[in-house]
Image (spheres, rainbow, N blue to C red):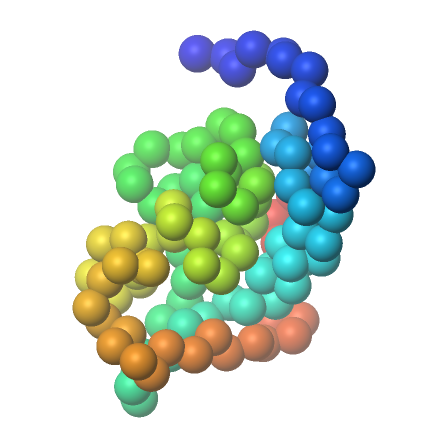
Length: 113
């Protein structure tokens, strides 16, 4: 089903990003997330899943929570991102305990267009 084109009203502190009204600082956070390719649980490191392929269906629109487009990494803390270890929602799974750290690997992977 195609999404309807609706006019989004923006507050002065917002910009439009991939069809979502977001705070004007959000585009930089989404850009930074594209360099945060791995997540570490204890001694093991896992490749983060890209948006649009997590739940067995290919997304055709921006993430409703962080505005990532299909093929991009979610902004850290997005409620849609799944855990690469257990496949549950990353922000609520028990895999990370208190030791979650995102490992930033500059230039190792490029975002798919």
